[in-house]
Length: 102
Image (cartoon, rainbow, N blue to C red; front, side, top):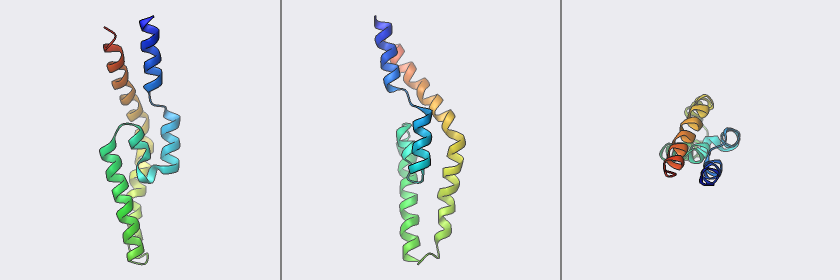
């Protein structure tokens, strides 16, 4: 019975690769996928970089629009990193959930 409860707890907490990619595709430029995957510091940095880039683009009337390339590059690289981040996150969750069973 405790194994079923432990497995259910893991299933509730584990991160979905599909959800991570959906967040990456729709809101990745503001770091939503990083918040979901338990990486709030890099999520905040990505959000701040996007906000600063947006403000600088408006203030400079588009002359500093090239700064979006930094955000876009990070966003594209994250597409390759997401499977590993999800795997490590789920491993941490499994270690925590299944170790409390003992």
